[in-house]
Length: 309
Image 1 (cartoon, rainbow, N blue to C red):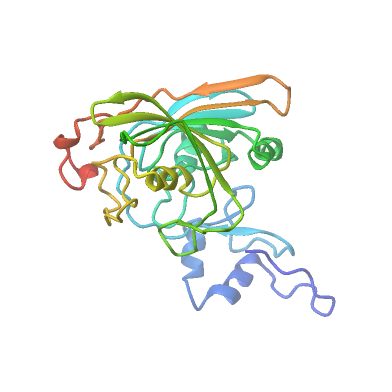
Image 2 (cartoon, one colour; image 1 turned 90 degrees about the vertical axis):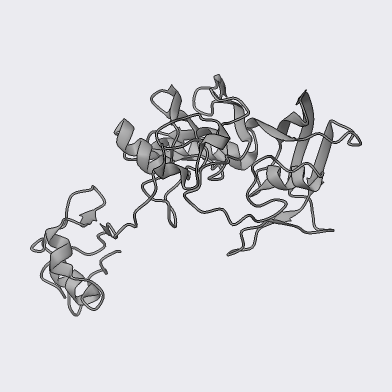
């Protein structure tokens, strides 16, 4: 929230910040109670006091009530850290940013606290169920330069995926189509005849019994792009809860991780021109994670794995 600018006719409409909050929010919350709990803070993180003088054009933030969240098992590995960048390797089921039912259980919230970096921000996103590399900047001043790389498509990405082997499928193959995901829908869709906005090179690296280890090189970054492209070839990724069928998996069911891994990231650093390349410390197949265990056999995990040992 932002306090209004001063009105010439009434330059100090509220003597204190507390008075302004009370006038604005009293119908919805117990303002004095929240102020007493230091749930209102300024941009700096300092708590708002009821008696603080009213100041125009001042941003005030509040900490809302959070639901209980099942702890997401698996370790966040710090692959690289320097003045500008932190590169982490995230486990499946952990959201990149706080949103919806995932606030504390997100990379941003966990790592800001763990590293003591309040401005730590991701430069791109991974689906909650996808594992692997994520690049984050340490401070706000670095964001623009590194975000521009992803916007311009100058970051080379390599993913690995486990999926069935189709003997009648000629590989490598490039999949190009138009993908869209409507707001409120869990599933992405292909739009026939629309301009191409999703492009992936797909190759089979080796066979593992009835499954193949596929190397995926996306040139674009549409939502669910890799999952949709393999599904469209008739080789859906193992453990996918949405494609080809929405399995309606409970949000705290961690038994079957999606077998999709953001394996490599490389780019020319926009600040100093150096060549940067990072690799995940994980490998496929990813085992299910239960309780505090990072890797366990899938069959060892009962439903609601986060609460099991």
